[in-house]
Amino acid sequence: MTRTNNPIARFLIYIALALFTIYNVLPFGWTILNSIKLPKDANARTPRFIFSPTGDNYAELWLNVSPEDFAPYGLLLVLIIFALGVIVFSAKRIPAPNSLIYFGVIGAGVLVALGLPRVVNTAEFYDYLINSVIVTVGTLAVSLSIGALAGYGLARFRHVVSVYILVIALAFRSLPSLALVLPFYYLGQLSGLYDTHILLIFCLVAVNQPFTIWMLRSFFMEIPIEIEEAAMIDGAGRLRSFLSVIVPIMWPGIITTGLFTLLLAYNDFLLARILTQINWTLPVGIAQWTGGEDPGHVTLAAAASVSTTLPILFVIIFFQKYLIRGLASGAVKG
Amino acid sequence: MKKGTFIFFVGPSVFIMLALMTLPLLASIWLGLNYITFRNLDEPLWVGFQNYQEVLADPEFWDSLEFTLIFILVTVPLRILLGLMFALLLDQIARFRGVFIAAALVPFVMTPVVGTLIFRDMFDRGGPYWYWMQQLFDYRLFMNSATVPLLIIFHSIWTATPFAMIVLFAGLQTLPQESLEAARVDGATWFRQLWHVAIPHLRSLFIFIALISIMDAYRVFDSVFVLTQQNPIYDAETIMYYNFQVAMSFGRLGKANAMSVLTVIGIFVVLIPFLVMTYREQTEEN
Image 1 (cartoon, rainbow over the protein chains, first blue to last red):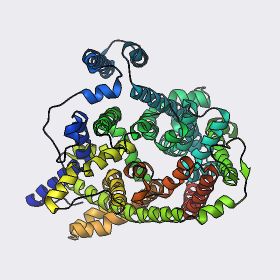
Image 2 (cartoon, chains in turn blue, cyan):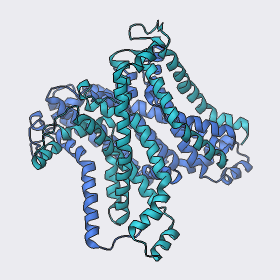
Image 3 (cartoon, each protein chain N blue to C red):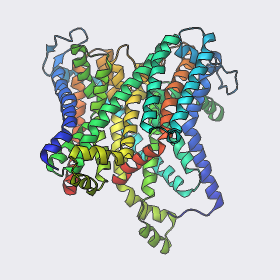
Image 4 (cartoon, rainbow over the protein chains, first blue to last red):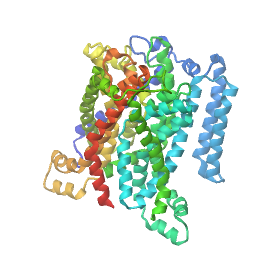
């Protein structure tokens, strides 16, 4: 639409958007400040923006031992994570197959994650993080692989059965997850699967599956059918042509769908709250500080909030364009 | 694609949806007809429709339904309006769009429990919003049954406006240029372009956002859990939250399942027109 030429109007628009931006990020900024405050600063009657910072909250959150041991290990860990990050970012310039590098980095990450509790005395919050990672990765793997097959099948098989499946999936998509999780809880209790990662992953996959197949199908629809027809003329079967021709060009769609799945699994509170007892994920772990009168809760909850949010923010910033494209593609199709 | 290949591709997903969604729903119907608490999980007591009678006679259930409906009626239009407003503002400028959009993603992607927690900290005694309200308007905010429901509504708008904004902004980029050009030649002002070209073009997006928002709205749980601190005095239970409480706090699994069956029926009744619409659309596409 026509853009305004009036400099004052333009200035006001920038001011309005700047205020909107502050309104969006200020609460998180405030929480970062709270997370490095002493309880007496965080519980002051007037907001304190200037104070002497402390790392105690993070030490108390992550470790059972006294804070003196915290600094060297923390520094080492930050260095290792940074080094792995650098390797991932410069993977294209290293003269080795990319997949090898990525697997190596993932392997190193798993080793560090498993080895850490043996080196330092980690607190329960570390276990919540590991649980969250296991559940999120498990949900992503199952949900995307099954969903990609189904999305492709539904995009290519033009038949009334496909329409039935899609409409039923849409109906499922609209269900409140509580309606599913209560029977899951009951069956989990009876079968002894209660409080396991498997049960939570299955529940999240189920809740997420309708959305996954709808979204992936819409991406597969954009791929011209001639591409795999060419591969099949060359003698490749359906599955071969799907894996070797379609999936490689579908990566953007799979990443986009994966991001929404990741947000759903990592952010989920209700399902994990009901289906776990001690194997909590991060949101359930944080919820324990939501009430209560203990003044230390504010700073601990802030440190926990920052620790939970930073990983997801890094992922989102890295893949931002996929997320926005996903939102926009929902937009274009309606 | 042949039928066999189709079954091979779609089979796992359909199996997952049958086994992990249909079966639990059937189980839910059965559980709703039994008296079950944490103590008699393995030997439920058949009580027929007693749970349903109890739910329908429960004033708390109707209260939570009422708040859920108010929540939907207030938040859904506000999300769309504010989203449209900021999308139009973004459309006006050329620089820093990426920064504004990236910042808007923060409340949207943040874990809801965390987001609510830090949102509450802003309004708690000693938080910046609390302090500024006191300084500027001489208003001291207390958490009570009037303010907590408002904060729940405000929080939902805070997290969901960016979604509407990004979707509508993307929609604005696909406006039919010929119509805009024609309008411009006719000397149409910005408002007339908005009213006659943009809004009709964005109509399907408004429906899309409204649908997603309504689905989000009757599911709202995390923010209620955090902002009420599980304390009933704030009188801000939504239907999901009350349902959760009946199950996990009061331990009445049978009654909770009856309640969720009622919720599902209610949702389907509202949803049928959209399902029929989708069915027609998809059949035409095929």
